[in-house]
Image (cartoon, rainbow, N blue to C red):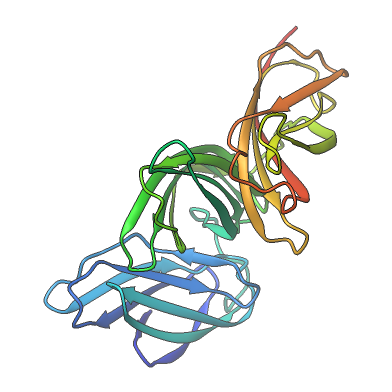
Length: 301
């Protein structure tokens, strides 16, 4: 299915769709598709060739039905947009295919350094696997921070081992910028490098999770504490890599961070965890709700 600027058409769930535009811009271009529930698919950046640029997306197999809007931005000011209608596949369910992982939410806080010309950024993303049949594995995430003039001021890459079918993953962390120029937009590229039919995966639960103030930096978040509970596996939990996203009172993402637990946790037991990395740019009055995801390692015993 081809979609050109100014056209409107129907795209069925699971169907590949190509967005192509002509542009006078010589800057790099980025395409985004936004579905009616707010979920987005972002392309990688491309440079126009002979005044043309295109991308191919695959509509998620459970994309929200109804209007979907696409936007292409090139350089600082050039932009084109259009729409299609997301529809159910004719003839029944979509055969199993590579899952699509979308960005359900994104956000960050940036704080200028007091000791240098740089700044600290605490960020968070909610990754959503739109497939109900395939687990997304080894998900590569490229995050660019862009200024108002379109110039990149920072880049970070992350890898998520598993986003389960129909599930979400709260990806939070921080990055140190070499500038105090404010970021105005995230450009996120997600690539699923492996997948397999969904299967039950034990994950520990979290309880009594709370946001704590910094003891040395008044007015900012210092850490996120709580309890990790090994109640879904008969094996000992030997390592837990914890990822946290912070929301404000309206549900907007204001940052994120990480923690790690090395102490063995036998089945049926619980212990305190401390996540103390990545939150220093987040104002304490802004952070209200922590979302926690984990990558566990188990060992028999």
